[in-house]
Length: 351
Ligand code: SF4
Image 1 (tube, rainbow, N blue to C red):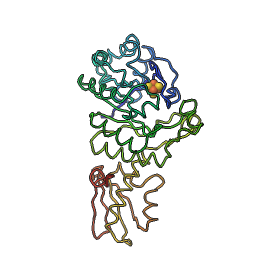
Image 2 (cartoon, rainbow, N blue to C red):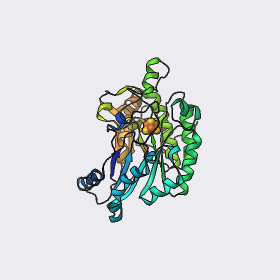
Image 3 (cartoon, helix red, strand yellow):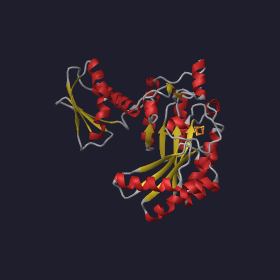
Image 4 (cartoon, rainbow, N blue to C red):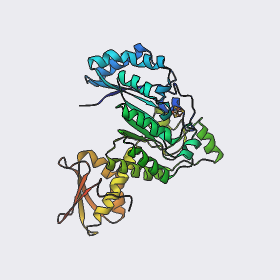
């Protein structure tokens, strides 16, 4: 069944901090005003009609939900109670900071229909967290996971590779620590420099250099790969482009690309292709078969993977969608022999 999430962006509401990279208004494209009960009910009703599904989820993104006053949290969740009771809203998710999780508040959220809390983890390196002005340490995230898991809440973690003082090693170490805490979903947002943020001043003064697009892709392909091997879904890679960010109006620097995830997925497939085609002689005419959903990733943006294979002397006759193949599988044949691969098991970035 198609999953439809009705989003409410509560930009910077409730957050007493100012992380160096954050300008919630620019990230979400939303003004810092909480929606009223009438607005919540009418938006959910509109989405139920326009999406054509009978059941939706509701998400409050962009702020620090659990740092809102109890009255404000109640005012946002109360209009959803009849919809939860009738079944037209199946679940509610909220985002918040790891240090704003308490057992009492989590119990209230569970009773109010919240089933998933996304934590802005960013890093599990205390020096990186301090340099980013987060105002909490890695232990706060460990404690938050413990409280949420023992309350039966699903937990999401948002990671931000490329913050000041962080490199590939930090990104991998953070991912591995988070995976050991058993998150239900992950989001990975490489750090970008938005105008008007403290990070912008650091960038302009020369004290911070963001990852290049290629560096971010190289790091994220490994993060994505390890998460996939661990069976943890990564539901987003790269910042969601608001109209302004897509036009470059609010973005000062950093590895932003409107189709960042596809760049990363295509890199993983290219790494596997390179391994598999080595089994064929250079003059072999290769036919590649993958699941329909993976054709675009295997081919690459603007056919980049096929161009790279051809530049290395390989002849690719066709890339064909094969509905019988699982999404992680690939077959390459030259008509004489066939080589099979699986991106989850045949790609190892540790080697
Ligand atoms: S905690 Fe979240 S909302 Fe608050 S400043 Fe940091 S990133 Fe922005």
